[in-house]
Length: 277
Image (cartoon, rainbow, N blue to C red; front, side):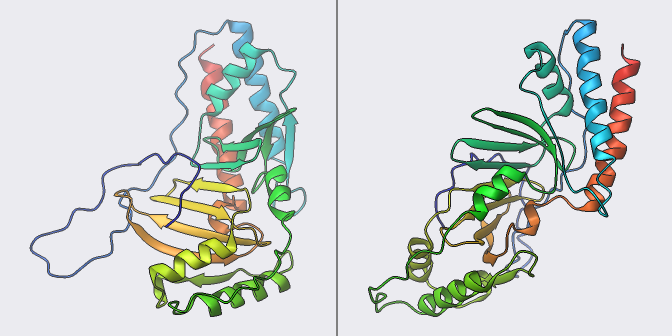
């Protein structure tokens, strides 16, 4: 298990063992996040409040273009918004379950799945998309590392064969291909195998944390389209460890159904906020 750059926030109590059972049960996460409207704690002036609501209406109009059949992305810059209005917009959108970090660029999903706040140098956007475009492009820019010339340590079990499989899958992967998944939790690998793979695969500068069901930590390797995907329960026990060869792991993506839910919830939220004026 390797270090992860995004601070992890627990989401609730973990499963407790029943002393009456002799089975060694897998400690799966016990809590599933459900939608909760953002908490508004603001004393904004009425004109600021109305301006923020107008921004949310614009986002809703953008979401309505994401049908899954035509447009796949809506983006608007908020760099020029009045700071007081932007603060109110951020409160109204809230924070969701997925955080993404790269060098100089961050993305935080809002309470509305598939609607992101993307920030970086000269960038401050609200984007409705399955995964933030700038971060997807950053991840896609990875180049295949030169193959190691040194022989692997003699004490390894399956790591050399797994590295060869990962390297081959990375080389042949094309956008839109199905994910090639290697579930390390189900394979006979030693701690030395994992350490070797970690060192050889390196880092690709993108880290994703999804808190939707336990904690899922996703780390881009230095290899194109190769990611470590690790699931932890609420007691911080690693329960699934895998390597995925794909443009972005599915657990980090918003689906068409998510956009439909977000459209409905955002419309209801705007109506609720408007009645408070």
